[in-house]
Structure formats: C-alpha cells, structure tokens
Length: 117
Length: 280
Image (cartoon, rainbow over all chains, first blue to last red; front, side, top):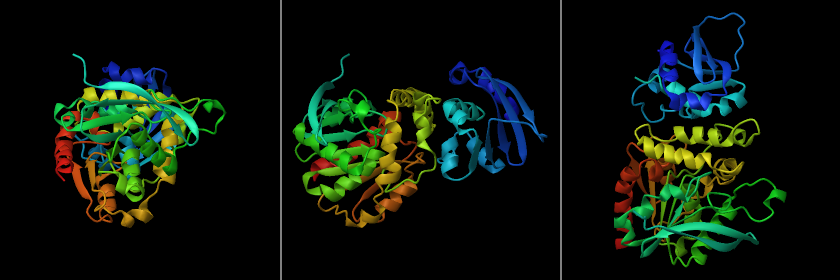
C-alpha cells in the first residue's frame, strides 16, 4: 500500500504543487510497521520500511492498521475520510513538529488520500 | 448569462463602531437571512441565491461578516486586540443586519458557527424570527486541534485553512464545488478563521441552555451532512434530543459545507423545509 505512495503522488501535479517547498522526512506508522517518507519539493523521493535505529523525522502520523484500512477504503465511510476526522475520533496521533505539519496539511491530506483504491 | 444576485454595501454600527458590510440578495417574498461558516463568506450560498424555485417565494440575503469576504474590519483595526468572535457580538450582528436591511421576521439559516448562533437566536430572539434553520448545528465542539497554527508567520494561513476545510467535506461531493469552497477558505484574512473558532470551540458553548429553547415560538430545523466530523450527525442529534419540537434531517453524502460543497444535493433537502415554513 504505502509502497505505491510515490507513484500515486508524483504523477499528480494537483497534489505535488501544495508540497513544492517541502523537504522533509516524516514517520508514517501503520500499526506496528513504521515507514519513513522523504519528500523533496513535493515529490515522494523515498519510502523506507522500518524497523529503524536512531533515525530522525520531522513529524509522525501514527494510527492502527484497522484505522488506515478504513481511511483507505474508497469511498471511505463518514468519520474515517480525513486525517482530522481520525484526530477527532482519537484514532490518530500527530507528533513532532506541528508547525511543519500545518504548513503542509493540504499536501499531506491529499497525498495520504491518494492511496485509496 | 447574468445571475439574479445583486451585491451592495450597508453601513451598520456594531458594538458602537461603524462597519461597512457587504451583502448579496435575490428573490422576493419571505426574508431568508443566510449565515456563512467560520473563516469564509457569503459566496457559500451562491446556489440558494440562484435557485429559481426558492427565489419565487423568498428574498434570500447573504452577508459577509465583518473581517470576512468583502466586508471590512472596523476602521483602525490595526490598533485593536486580535479579532475574536463572541456570542453577544454575533447575535447583535445578525439582528442588526436584519433590522438595517428591513427584513421583517426573517427565517435565519446558518451553517457551522451559523448553525450554533441559530440556537442562541432561538433562545434570545424567537419572537422576532419566523423560523430557524441550523446547518451542521452542534451545541459545543471540543478543541481537538490547535487552530492558532493557522495564524502563524511560518504557516501559510490560506493553505492551512484550505487544508482544514477540504477534509470537512464529503469525498462524494463534486470536485468543482469542493475546490470552490476551499478557495473561499484560502482567501481569509490572518487570524479571522481562528478568531471565529473562539466562539465555536470555547465561548459559544450552549449545552447548559438547550432545554430553554421553545420551538412553539419559533420552529427549528436542523440539517446535518453525514460526513461532517466537526458537527457530526451524533452532535446534532444529541442537541436536538434536548430541544422539544426540533426537526432533524441527516443529509446523506454531504459534509460540513452542504450548501457550497454539493449545491444540487443540498437544495433537494432545503426546498421542502422552506415549503413547510412558507405554509405554516
């Protein structure tokens, strides 16, 4: 699933434009599996699968496997369709540098939703 | 093609200060005053203002709140404390606009913060109003995110507000209207959206007073989109359960901005409500 992120995002200029100033690595946690996603100028440069030893990241988005399965359904059910919908129901944890997360909120929402089938 | 909407400016004193308020209107008949959501403006009601069926019987008016859309902040705003909406200021604003525009016993329809203020209006001004329509009405929404990030020098407020608004809509709503709605959010001034949310998430909590709303004096309709997670169907139903006579409709496939994100589907829900109000 996550492995397809680069293909889905990089091929869609309507997503890439909102991340064009973004040069960051962030943590995406799907249950016990960790991924480090590196973004360069809005393009997904690298998706690495953990476990990791002492790696840095700017912010982390953590949720259970079941939660992401709901989020990535197409169409998603009400209340499971957006990152902040997951936040309100307490299903996702947003950690680290909140400033950067807010700066690229639209990009991140569109990029994650691009993984829907 | 030219739309039937006309736009004008009204000079109205609010809180002892002069304000230049932009409003749009169309149609003739029963006044229907429309209140936009936090951080946006009256363009959200473009479909209602263009619906021939509604315009036959209603004079539809949508104004931009001060600081929003084409309405300015009061003069010398740069010396003031940062903008923060309060229940009193919002209530006074709605009633003053209705009065100044000569709207006699109007129907007031508001969405989100507007859906909240109609509950306050139901308490304070029921006798002066013909009916109230709350879109995405909730008595209170707890702070589950920190809105102050949208008013930060190192975060683009327009992009962040656009990102926030985007997710509040239904994934089933047409892209064309979802992104029109996002654009309105991207145009908001610094601190205005978060200033509105002070009323929504902190000061405008009406949970303890719901029981006192008397829908025999002024009927109350509550319409909520099923994809809204801010004022969710559960929130609306919880509020309605404490208001005798409140009529709830859950709108399938719609989100937090029903009138703007999917106008055609929304009008399908609104027209029967307006017909019922007209026939009372």
